Length: 304
Image 1: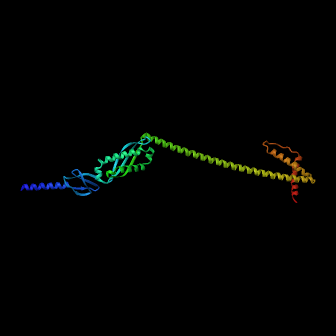
Image 2: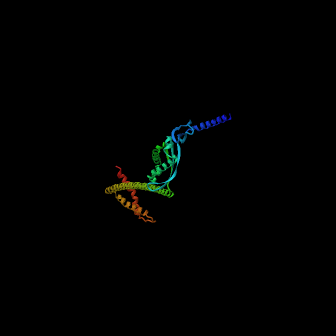
Image 3: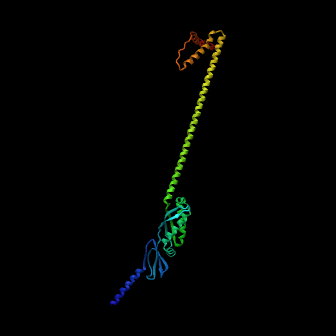
């Protein structure tokens, strides 16, 4: 009786172990491969599954979610012999867990080496200036090359991002000095252009002022000439009138010319800077006084 109970207990324990070994629960986001005696037989989807214990076994547990792989920093020599240090990150997803399990050994390490090799190939064919200014083009080129190379592994590379491209410290200093020189050059050019424009504006202003001054002088000369012409015409008319009066027998008319000479001489003496006392004969004052009479004479001659 005791032997029968012991047998039942052993069978129950073996059944529990057998069932526990055969029940498999695959979590969401994963796919497991099943191997029978070391050979792939099927793939388990997320959920609860049963396999034959001791006959079937789980081969690989593949993560089918998008994964991030940090690429180790490495030094790259550009086509113009500049040494730079690069740092990148790769995003990929397993689409075929069978290929990812049996077509490549150590998938993360293989991805790491593949991406680093392509980074050296792409950046090594570019000059330093192109590296620093064409980050998007570099990412696109790397993505195309790596995605094509990993297709036999059942992977889909979604993104490759170059996080940093760091030239050596001495090269960075040289680039900073070059940029400073370029900025100083542009500033000097702008300053020279400003001074040139200012000189042009000053020259134009001086030219305009000279033109206005010349026009003013010409206008003044014209006015002065016109005044002289009118004065000469007036003197000519006065002389003609006095001459006519003399011819008609008016003896006092001759005093007009004498008085005019006296007046001109006195004007010149008065304009002199030296103080002078002028002694005039009585005849001169009489002659000058006769100018008023001559003036009346001229008025009478003008009156018809």
